[in-house]
Image (cartoon, rainbow, N blue to C red; front, side, top):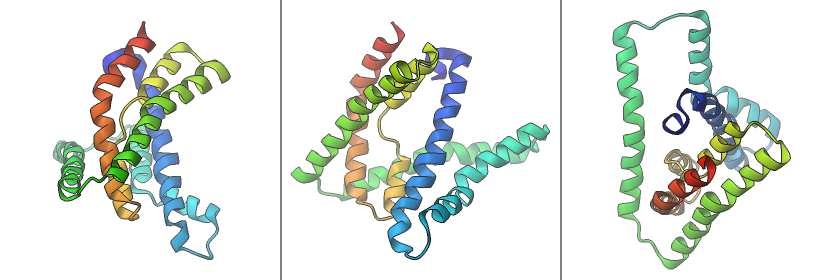
Length: 195
């Protein structure tokens, strides 16, 4: 988003990340684990899953540190920068290992194709309809929202699928296929949104 919009893209990007963390990771994780925790209400699971989610806790801690104006000592900041930089490649390494170990059959490929079509075609169109036609918000937010929606499935989805044993083989195939297709689809959506 920053490459397309400069500093104007920071707001929509931050909102998208917060929405993903608060809704998809917290609520999605809770709903996937709800079947194994009988007797506990879904509302309580969602609250617990959101409050105890390490990603939400990290964002809240970062916001408090920024609001108070504290700065971390340079060695700590450098270490955290290295740690954060290693997270993406580590997840991709795990995803690559899963893909190398699995045998992709016709059913997996068909399901991954459906997930990819939904993620790269239907989801951006739905986001455009909601943001532009229903909410009629500022054009930069529509552009950013549709561009973010058109990105391929993220590697963190594989980590969640693996954690909850929610068909990680299918998820890894869908991530790989959506990433491959997005090489063409993302520039096309960017062209449509930015012209």
